[in-house]
Length: 587
Image (cartoon, rainbow, N blue to C red; front, side, top):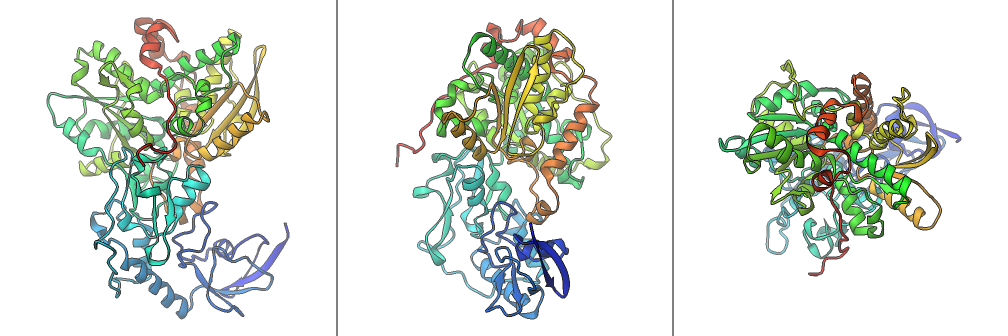
């Protein structure tokens, strides 16, 4: 592509012709403030914070949507711009619930940061009260996501992510002028629309208008109850994100510090959900081989991501027969804790309080699904996200960075490298291939890095030869991409044997419950790639890198489950899914 030359604040720069002024400024490390801008997602010039002066221009222009032109002269820090930006911030603050000290995003809020940087200490404007006065009430009904309209700044980043990235579109900007709001159709709760609970809107929100439904009080209550035996399971991705909440650079691995910190909270046992990921591979891999060899429904599609499952139930129910019948690793671990572990530990299942630490907000919804129950009990009693765990550690005044570290507890405590890579898009497919290849060839294969399914690209395709089979694979992250792939399959334009789908772009390492990074940080570094790189490095450092070679997996089958896909395994580790209404019947 051809390049154009322009000057910004008197400095020359050459950039591709399709760049905006904001992108050109970033190339010079010129920091133009933004609020509504989110790279590759939301570029609409709505907030007006990124205004610049252009020689010969008719007025100030929003740099995030202003194309570069040859010879353009731009200024980003004039007296007029500083005064205008402060005025814009004062107007935003006039209609913003400024309870900053108690806000969940305090000290990690893009609006708060800009007010400090630009010297705005208050707003001179009085808020025009709407009908009924005060701010609209918060929506707390969803099991996963809470919404506070009083903190919304109308940046529309959540709208863009929900509609354009995830292909769901349950939140929209409605009304005009001062009466504009971001909300749902008919002002329903997120619990009553076709929200998939993925939490990507939370990751996009620059303020505290969207947040994770907090369950830490329930967990603290259980820890403080002497009648409860509290057991934690921790998902693979958590250890690659948790450190960021304590100042560790993205991609830092804090597995042992995390395990010790959780024990210091006062819990009874801490288990690695990598074990359940290995269990999932044993069940799902066996199911896949059975479908391929016996003419079962293909392509078989993974069922580990609860956001994807709800998306499929709601938007593509015709593909429900293609879903693996396996529960997610969290669901399997919950079942194993309330049965196998309870029997071995001599603890009554009803006395166990099972907590899952997940990178995913949709896991809160999944844990409450009746399909995940173990008899009359819930397999998982509470789900907390990576951010919630960090808050608990800070509340307990634990000096996380000074911890020496501890191991996970035994019996169901450790997983293989294959379990670790579940956290990245393509990881489930690769882990399944490692086991399926050994089973089908009858060999302990040495070449086990299936790099064709790695990377953060939204849709990846590969044909993997295993013995006499050529397994046709697709790996998808982001439900918007899932919809595109499923439409191709319906149109007869694509054919696969196995498809891995994760609801969140990049996989679980960038789940809705992971640490939130500002739009500027996201522009400078791809945190998906940094976390995934650490995840694959952790896999390489494991002595055991195949699920079926994990001795704890061998033991649970020998002692309890008999074999993969056995009758008992199906009772505990498998489930079913049902079609959901796209539009609720009560409107």
